[in-house]
Amino acid sequence: MRFGLRELVFLLVLLGLPVAAYFFVFAPTNAQIEQVRKENLIKKGKLDQLQLARHIEDIGVEIDKLVQAIDLFEAKLPAAKEVEVIQQEVWQLATRRGLNQRSFRPDKTIASTSYSEKPIHMEISGDFKGFYGFLLDLERLSRITRIHDLELEKQKDNEGFVNAKFTLTIYFEPPKPKNTPIARAAG
Image 1: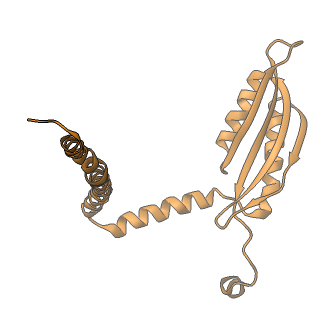
Image 2: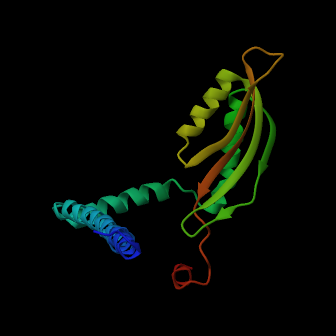
Image 3: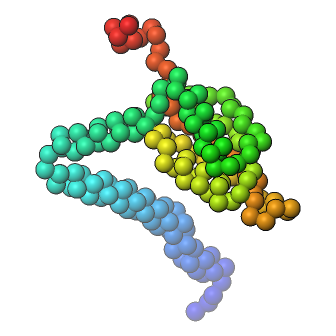
């Protein structure tokens, strides 16, 4: 048997067919199958969540519990006019713990639809135990607050004394708009 150009071309076409089939048929089909598997996993997860929700005996009772939890958090949000009172409380807590307040600068209020934030940039110094007690006092406040951007450094000349820079955020209810039907009916 003679092996010429015609047979070589036939052999190359014969070998190239499976390679072309892989790239043009099998690879895209495998990608589609994988995509369908991912979508099925997501749908199965949602079905599992629905099955859990179905086992809740009384949805109304669960909703009432959630409403009570929301009311509890809203009760911890002071009205906008009470923010100055809370700032004064924080100032007094630091003084009561023997801390020196180097800086107490309220920043602009950050408003959203359900709550507002009043950041206060503070710099205080004093005994570490006093600072720790101050943090515990802040935690015991009946209002929701948060400390972030805390920088604490040991004083070089006084053993056991620290300088602290941080931002204290007080969360509160935003003022109600005066032109809404609810505000007009209440007023």
